Image 1: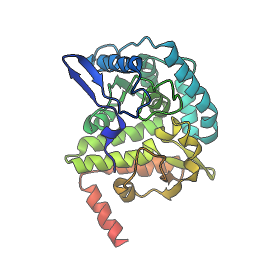
Image 2 (image 1 turned 180 degrees about the horizontal axis):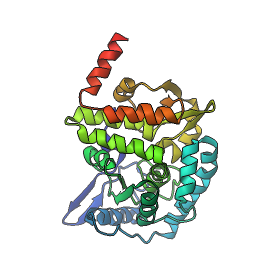
Image 3 (image 1 turned 30 degrees about the vertical axis):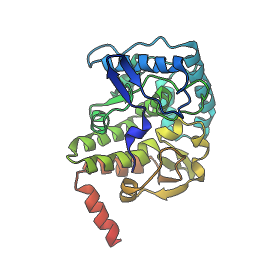
Image 4 (image 1 turned 90 degrees about the vertical axis):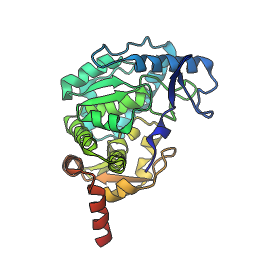
Length: 296
């Protein structure tokens, strides 16, 4: 398992305003203009309240270039490596590839397609809030972009990961419903251990899931679909069949390409088995799975 806080730079609010605390090895750590921009975007997200219009950002020319570069590089890779449902959802959502879209634009399109809508996130959203909101068809999305020196790499989820990865997935009715069921599972959890188990299974499915289609291994996880490097490498991973006990207890490292991935045998296994797992999940589920694993 992992600590999700590692994924996001901490955000604090004090007398001097909102500060995003980038790690020393972050590509933008020593760029004062980038740091100021991150603080500005985070402040807008923290000030936002439900019911208000989503924060509107005047994206910079460099930010548009980053979006265009990544979108261009991923375009062909999605055709080669992504599952059919993702490609169809991507076509339906019709994100621009030459400029960064506003969250409001993407949210309106998603609502029309699957009922999901977006809320702005300054950085880390607490586990219970992030996953629980999926039950209400709400996805929390960051608005900042990675540093311009490394357009094809980011050490943390940015709007490219959230929108190109998760946003396109949310435009698929089948996958959006699995996400909703994951949110309902999180809402039912009364223990941190139960919630973490849901998060870890989510990681190996919605974040880094792969699937066989007509005998060919393709990907549907947002972390793969939004990563220029990892989408080229996932077929070389140790591919295992779905095993919810193993997925929920696997010790993995988020800072490297995932060496172990779990594959669905087609969309039906994702909607029925993974969706069914989330639909039936309670705090007792991990112990029940562990007992079954010992018997096996």
